[in-house]
Length: 570
Image (tube, rainbow, N blue to C red; front, side):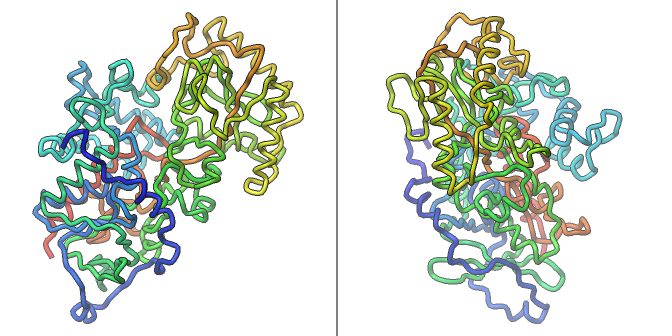
């Protein structure tokens, strides 16, 4: 397959999927007795049934195929690929063989210390045999270290997913997202890309490679097929699923197992409100990610975990209010003469740092006022920043999107920002800038401009983290001591964009073992029941380990689930 081949992820299919599910059957499970199982009328039978056609689901299918199983892949949407198809296609894979091309060598001890430190910071204990992690997570992350590289190397070898080290704008491999901390070891090259003619491929390329390989090796892929019920026998083994299709209900037996790679619950408002710590409005996940598996699992005694966490991502407020599944989140805040401030006109973080950690700032709570002071944020920039560039900043001379607020003075900008919040009141409620916003903003800009003179941001260390430079290509060299900090102009025009909290997707759901088997509330695996990817309780806990952190884990454990399922004798 060449890079010129058309992606199977279509815009028309994506929009069609936006309304899917409104009239769907109730989600749940069915338990049949031994006698009923003998009489059960199945419409079809496969060794392994896979729900979901993103990276995790496709990896599960390929793992099962490599184990000699017959496979059907069921996709709820009108198109294949899920959120993987919208992604950059990166996968975080420790100890991969491609690192050596850049004279990089991984280290298991450094890997474990890094993931323990950032995934479970409140538990981290460098004197503990498990570094403070639970035995469950210790086992999972050790299994990830042992299996991730072999899985990706196998997929590359057979042509299912050609890989290479993901290289940035400067041709160098990527640092991890928290590369500045001592436990990281400053190891580069754990992020892989889809290798498309020697260049970084996309998530759509990943879906194309993997789906074509699966079909070429016997798997069936069906769109507009939503799994609505899990069927198990009286011994508790999952033996099949009921599927809602355009033609009606289809009952499919799974002789060896069912693998769920159906994504998270980003577009289920009830679950977002009940589970997540951060007030989230939506995100990058495809609109069909509504937490179906959580609802079905509730009747099976499944042990759930990590429901309060997500792969955090800032979003443009007005875009997510228009449609909860945004085209793309705010991966980075561009520009050099630019800052992000809260309703008090104060900065909150290094604006060049990674999107998951910036998004955490939205959840800060003020017990005195009883509110989230950073709930909605204001990204402010000038024409100098437009010259520097950044994908959410319109270039000088380009038309301004409707979500960009303007003002010839800071006074006018502040008034227009409040007017914009007022115009959104029916959807977000009353949100007022603090009475000291303008005065504080001026002080903030003066202080920030001082950092531009010295090149050192003593508040948030902007530009110092390894990942800051990775995300920000310097298109214009202004000769600044710190290329990521330039003074904001004393004269307008000024521009602002309103930001909210969103996700790439959520990362909580059924807990699973090192084989991808779903666990029950007694920590025992449920036979025939597997999960991978964002539908599951991610072993990465609170963190985003590095670029491709979601797909690295999802594909690895998806493949292991497929292999384990295929090896079952029933």
